[in-house]
Image (cartoon, rainbow, N blue to C red):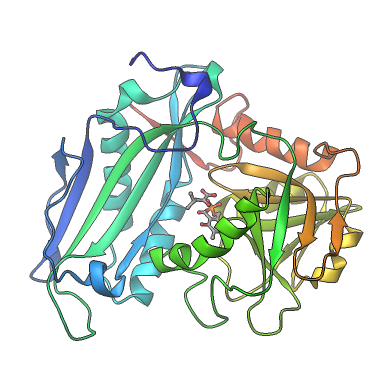
Length: 340
Ligand code: PLP
Ligand code: COI
């Protein structure tokens, strides 16, 4: 194991030893290759550089209390990458190949898997890009799927604690029939300006409404929104949000806890009615929301009056983390143990 200050890792890039790559040429995927380079040679007219023909994923491997390494729901990430590829005219990588690449990149970088006690994890970043040259707007003929791994700590400094969000109306991250439900780089480029605006004003992140009517909650930065109202778990139904694998998992656990699940359009003026709210995703699992400030109207929606995470989201957070770290048995078959 590497000599790293595991407990103080942030959510950032750290060089590791290996990444894995696979190339698509002449209508077929080749063999998985291992690389110790952090760089990749690129044609100056590659479609990923000019026309953003790219998609990516994010998933984590956890060192368990029992010394076993578990990856969370990798087949679901493989399938979501396929759906992003379909929408961007890129060839779909077979699910089994995706999973084999995940296994390989985890094994090759096993010395970078943070120890159980640190609460950190190994983040795996797959990306798939058009690599061959075009100047007209058309899909590439050749592609590369690459996966690297890097140890990460909490997404927001301080981990599981509430933060404030800035509701922005002047910038959208995605359109109703656009790319929001796919994990493509352009969505994140579209979010950088609003994210920076929110950050400069002291907020952890920006908060989006639906682009068409500006009436319904869409996403909390790069995470899905969850609201807790009495015994209900409420989360937006929208054509412009990413189908979060963590949200889907929390919905399952909440349902098994006896909660009512409401997947529906959520008008933003309902924000004042939630007992608890949070942003969810792989990076943070759940990031509880303290308040949401509408920076254009000046209205504040206070969610947590004492500034602390609420009991329902805390329980869900712990239940999911316990499955990921192998502290409790995984009744859903979400985790895959990687033989190192
Ligand atoms: N929404 C956006 C825009 C994201 O980038 C992510 C992260 O992947 C999520 C939601 C959460 O998705 P998941 O739970 O699959 O990580
Ligand atoms: C998440 O994992 O929750 C994310 O939002 C990923 C982000 C770093 C792109």
